[in-house]
Image 1 (tube, rainbow, N blue to C red):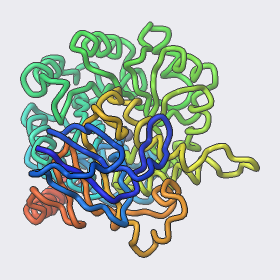
Image 2: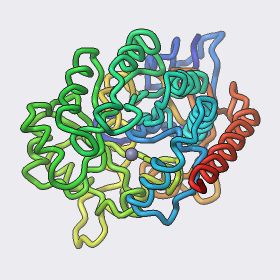
Image 3: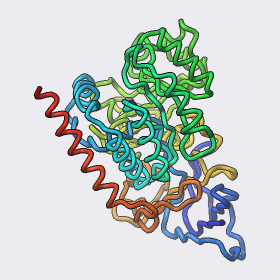
Image 4: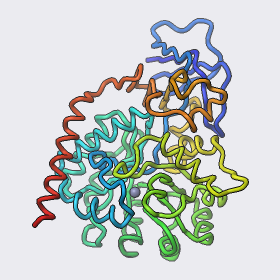
Length: 427
Ligand SMILES: [Zn+2]
């Protein structure tokens, strides 16, 4: 199966975002085979995508999102982190049935694809039963999204650890690291949980070949991991607001990576987004939506939040639009350990590709395609999306997925969860 994308303005992101002049993108069996001059004769039997008037770029990589919260959209807009934890994790989480998780993950994955986000690290702390886990993975698989399924234990206490479940996810549910959905361990770490539990989780993850990711802010978590000898290149630190310089040095020295959720952090009081400091220490940094309980689920909004926060209050800001697009693509892919497979249009990579309609109002005229993507584009401009060469959106419409069914299931789940939570909290 060969797909050829012609006539578009191609923006590759590796090593840095740049326009590839007069480029045609050729995809074979889901893999990019060439990005270069148009062949004189287009091989017969190829699917031709005419991207005239469009910007062709690698799909966005979201390095941190709780996909199951798609059915809680906007439910905590005014909440600070503490209020969010009380409402969402304390009150709403226990009301989710397995079928609600299926509906929420499917709807959340569809939302990502529609916005040109082709890969999501799904930090999934809704594993109340094995059935919830099966449902979460099933929905991700069905959606066609490329996802890292980060399994998190059902609660933060030592007794909530479910080693057997992590092993089952690895051996039975997601045994391959080459598929569209791959496994990881989303760890509470020595932030919400104990150092002993962290030691056990790190040993388990490393035994099973799973990368680790934890939420970490301020002084404490990095130091505790360092003291326990647990830092390493397989650890992704989420947020990182207020982490002292010495600790950022430790992360950098260990090869650890970071994920910043600038919109959520600005809104919920985590502290100033740390993209600038993280990058100044040489830490590979990706971007994330985090949760749609408070912010939109597209990377355009996240890029804008990162760009604004990264330059706020600076007389000579260093962060550029190009840096931001890099974090939303190849650097994000590196942050989750997937840059050999995705994040740019290099031949040999998976064909995760987005085509934006650059003629859209609010986007034309395009003087600088990189700036257009970062400062002006939005989900409405996302015309075509491919994941692993498979077309999931074309002509501005999602294909191969029943959007009406998914919406109905999501609304039903939202109604159940909120009604159940009201009943429980009224007791
Ligand atoms: Zn989070």
